[in-house]
Length: 441
Figure 1 (spheres, rainbow, N blue to C red):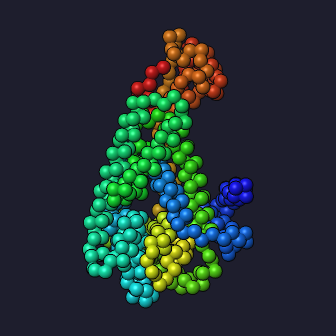
Figure 2: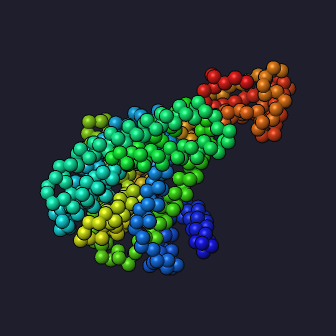
Figure 3: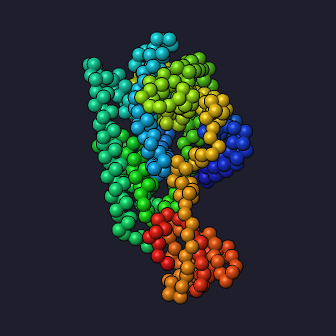
């Protein structure tokens, strides 16, 4: 146990410190964490033998649940809403087209069996495990009903995923607004439990757990008057990063680079085909009804990076018990590495080449943590003798975390507020925050 604790702490410390240095040189963080796992793994310098696909699958599922919830929780829906329809189409129709083209390419050009080719296409193109499982099931059935059940299965996963996520999120918001926990730290624990429940309940009912948890994250994260919202965001930001480090490190640890020699030709061929053909074709077809320029469509097709989710789905395929000719895990693993290395590294240059960099627009406005600090109103509050804040320090004044005191004007002087600063009669507080029209001091 002590040895495991030492290794775990070293991995976290090395991951954080190395990312600080390497990120400045344009190395994607995913590569840093996965690369570190490969160094610690069986073929690496440290030489820790690890080949437990089942354990990795279970830990990866938990990590993805938290990462997906945080992704929804941190999304500013008001900013993302105008592109919602396009996003949904890209994640459904776009994925189907990409997966189909990739599967046919693998079968026709690379001479992989049709079902295995479609499985590879579904794994590397899909953000939905339903398509992966449908193909896996079709290989186990003796009749030809496997493919015919794909569409109803996807519909069921989407419907149940959305329903479970929405209902749980609505109930959560009502509950935490109605009841006040005595301990502040209970709020993030409660919502974390809801995220896990959203995934597990949806999966048990035949829905898509990842869609459910993402939907619940969007609804909860964008609800007004959410207690301690800033603290909640900081909590999930921290735990999400821990999960990403654990996820990427374990995926790297599970890989055997010595096996790349057997699949490098197939993997590179699939990667290049997806980047140059499958993804652009899917993007141009899907976004044809919308007013996007050719440059914008090219950029959208370029940012379709393969990542941890694809590798996790490959682990699901590996542990499903289907006899496969090819090492799908290492094929997908290498495709993801190739995608992140090439597309991820060249992404800023590609955007500049297409002249799509807008220096006047802050992309972080898409996320709740930054959107709450942008374009806020500033108001001044006069503190009188009957104010509930008089003679209290800022830290003891029970001021909502949604309110930020920027400065205090006192008898012609400007005071930079601190937690121990005492609020006095006659002070003028310069504040900013959300829903200031309903604030009473």
